[in-house]
Length: 120
Image: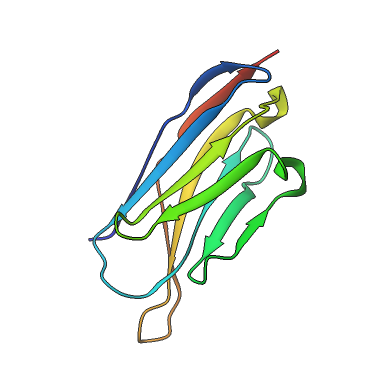
């Protein structure tokens, strides 16, 4: 059974830093990408950053230069280092795991989310 578990959220003052972790388990093959999405009230869930199997990364314009996504392949864990946090970064951060196994059918798995609150 595939599982995705986030950790590392919390309350921080503007300008501060946090590191989120996302650990995936329950699969052997088919890793395609992992990423972080942010959910805020009244808005659609939006991509913050993701990292592909090749190691290439993608960031939302609002976090470029402040956030860094990285991956530990052996641990099947993705990290999101957030610096220079702003109140607009507040939200529930959900981790996404995308698998593309041999059958060619893409599958998405989501964690329950971790709250990040940035006070001004």
